[in-house]
Image 1 (cartoon, chains in turn orange, red):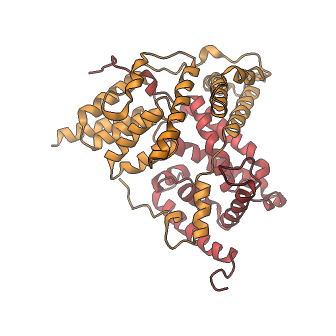
Image 2 (spheres, chains in turn purple, yellow):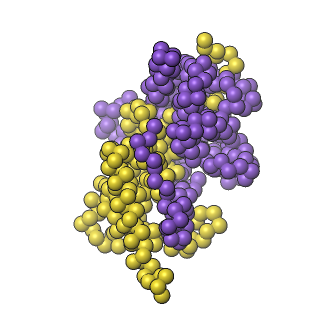
Image 3 (cartoon, helix red, strand yellow):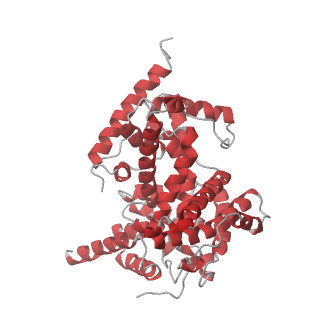
Length: 260
Length: 182
C-alpha cells in the first residue's frame, strides 16, 4: 500500500550515534502523566464552558459545542475516576465529582449529550474478543463510569500482559503497530486488533480497532467475517467517523468477488 | 446477517469528546514541545489543540487515524504559537524546559538534560523539517500518516524527513564537538 518503503527510524539506525538514539527513544516514551492529562482536560473543559456560555460566542457551532460540553462533563467524571484509580485502587469516583462542581457555569446542556451509543456492536469472530465481555448485553446510557471500570480493569490487566509480551504498552501504540502491520502483515494487524480488544475492551480507540480488524480481514480474504464484523459495527454506529473507511473495505470485497 | 445476539456492547465505543480529550492530553503537550512551542506557552497551546479537536470533532471523517488528525492540529497550532513568539526572542531562549514530572525512574534532571539536548538539535531545523522529523522519528507515525498530518504530498514528507535527518545528524556532531576525534 505504501508508495515507498518507510526509512528506518533513526533510533534503530546503526549509523546513528548511540546517544542520539537514546534521546529519541526517551522522547518516544514521553507522554503526560495521569495528573497532567487530568489538568489539561480540565483546562480545555473550562475554556469551552467559558467560551460557550457568556453570550454564546460560538453560536455557530452550537450543536457541536453542546455535544462537547456534555461530553466533557462526562470526561471530568470518568477521567478523574480513572486517574484516582490508577493512583490508589480503593478510591472511587466521588472525589472526581468535585472537579465537576468547580465550573462557574450553571449547567451544561446535558440532554444533548450523546450517551455513548453502544448497541449490539462488537464482533463475533476469532480471538478479538474476550469471552468475559459477552456478559454485558447493553450498556449504560450516560454512565460512562461503568466503562471506566472496565477500562481500569483493562489497564490493570495490561500491566501484567505487557511484562510478558512484546506487544506495545498502550492502546495507542498497539493500534499504531496494527496499522503499520496492515501493509504487508494483515494477520499481524488482526492479531494486534484482537489484543487491543482483549486489553482495552472499552478503550478509547475501539472504533479504530474495528476498522483495522475489518480491513485486515478483507486483506486476508476472510470476506464473510469481514462483512459480519463490519455490519455489526455499522449497525451499532451508523454515524461513526470510520463508516466510510469500513465501507471502502467492504467495497474491496465486492470488487474482488466480481473479478475472480 | 446481523447477529446482535451474542453482543459485547462495550467492545466498541465511539470517538466521544471524552476519548478525544483523554487521548490528546496524553501526547499533545510533548509533541508541541518537540515542535518548538516555548514552555511559557505550552499549556495554552496544548489546550488550544484540544479545544480545536473537540470543536471540530464532527468534522473528523475517519479518513486518517484519530491520532494523525490530532497531530495535524498540533502542527498547525505549533506554527501559530511559534509565529506569535517570533517577536519575543527571549522566550525562545528557554527551549527545552524543565519538565513537570519525571518519567519512570528517570530523574527530573536527567530528563531535562536530554530534552534540552534534543531540543537544541531540533532547533536547527526549519519548521517543515521539524514537523516531519518529530512525527516520524519521535511520534513514530508512518510516512503516509506524516504526509496526512502535514497536509502535504507523500514525496514531500519523505523529502522533508530526509533533509531533517541529515541536519539532525550534522547538528549532533557539532553539538557534541569533536566527540570521536578528541
